[in-house]
Image 1: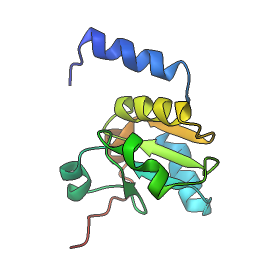
Image 2: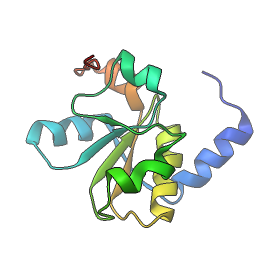
Image 3: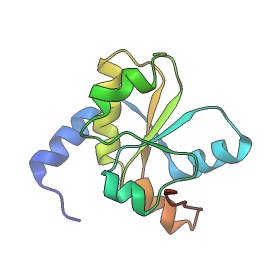
Length: 125
């Protein structure tokens, strides 16, 4: 997908303030059983199709509105991901502005996860 220069500019701005990790590190952390909240910030339809095992859904459009109800502890370790790492970077930046101290964006997103053939799961009805 080709993103517009203005969109990429705000993503780069957000990335200048956040911590990022990569797909391999997230997989290693999951395999080790590290305790952190995995948050899918994609659209509901994307999440319903498939998502990383153990992830919760808080879409980019509502995460700032709903995060405090779902995650009241500002120190909760969280890894955010989206399709490629852009929406999650912007969401991580906003959560930090809200006082969350342990937020990381997964660069590469679901596309990078799929490229490695790491497991995905589907939403149960």
